[in-house]
Image (tube, rainbow, N blue to C red; front, side):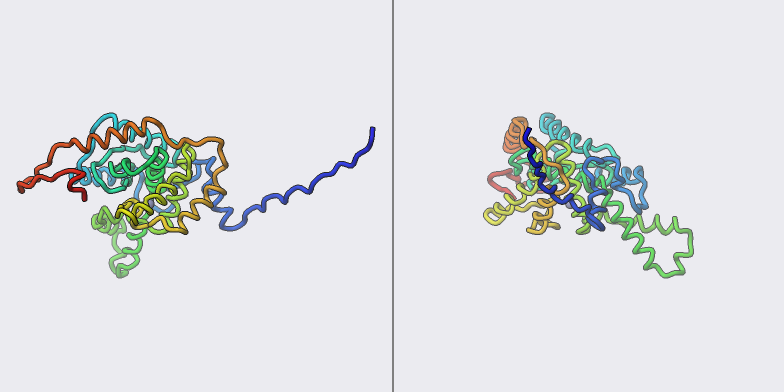
Length: 305
Ligand code: ZN
């Protein structure tokens, strides 16, 4: 037997173990440990129960002020997509998911898992993964408890800015007073860091549920083009627009944090059916007479706002 030298190519250098900040991010947001990595921990004056109670009160107000879509085919579908994402998330509260009749391309989740998806979002999405992408981002805010952490932070600021003489009293009393002042919707204005975290967590939940994680970025890139052409506004990200940096960061996160898969769900025929049904449902809605005024409000397409 002829001896032949075994040529081994030098192994590519082992990946440098990321150090410092990157390593902390990689381990804190390890996608294989969803649900068991302490997302949502940290300083928070609200217990989960209190958070749910707060969300329930806010939900009541929201529902007093908005029209819900109750068609069972539509609501069951949207709820199913949402619950599937929740099951692949770090959320520790059950979710109540409803569809709101509103043209705004938006979805929002209140603390405690009260989640509203606008009809405008469903109609603007081109596939199920795009819809799921926006929903996953909102679920991430709830999972990370951004709203109550936000409120906690502002209460701490309120406390430290109080003259020392008042801080002497029972702390619980001060807290209760400050808590009573909180304006619900300011709860949902998040810091840049909170938005960054929700972007990453949302991508992970979407990926973990089997969807193409790039769908959200694609969706907003498309909306941006439409926005310029047709004046569309994506309210979901109005305070935190999908700018170049954000898109780039999301793409990097997809590449570095999410192990590649052979297949992703992009859409289903059910999505197309529900979207068509919703469009039909909204188009044939009866004319609404505003209480007090006699003016009929015509629904789209005649009088879109
Ligand atoms: Zn957000």
